[in-house]
Image 1 (cartoon, one colour):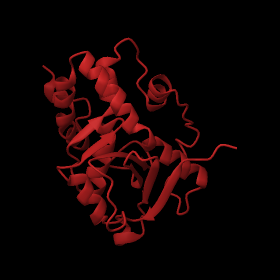
Image 2: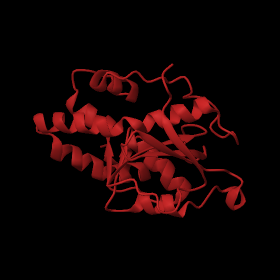
Image 3: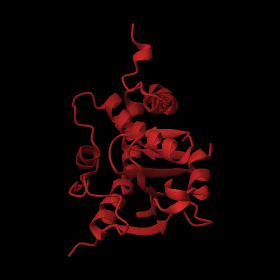
Length: 212
């Protein structure tokens, strides 16, 4: 029987002294898809070593506002650490709203894919893992209750899987960006993502300020 993904569960913050290197894959699980309404429940991180660290944000801490997470916030704000996401726009907004921290610098595998894989409209994480890495991901737990006090092993395994392949995807996409001469364009998009996330939080999700 195949083994599940390797992960360690932490409560309310990363442990002191945990170092995840210069590029950290990050994902979030929330109660829904509205960052201002739906609370942050879990933050997944990986250094690309095949192991995930899962930080459960429990609502009972800090009077119902969630954990303060000083170690996690320090990592997210560190200018020397690249935060690697898939669909960074959502995760950056969630983390800013919940923890009051702006993630930068960032890299988004979805944006990179859209810039170089223009022959397809399939840019989801499952699609990228299948087509670029030959890995099949299960999305069975995607819509489960992430606010539960005790997350099921199936939920934790699903959450871990979402960050374990991002470093490999970045390597593949970086090569394609270089081949197509779009590396600088991608970097410009990545730098703008925290601003896009802020616009989402103030209610301009359609980016209407750029309209006529």
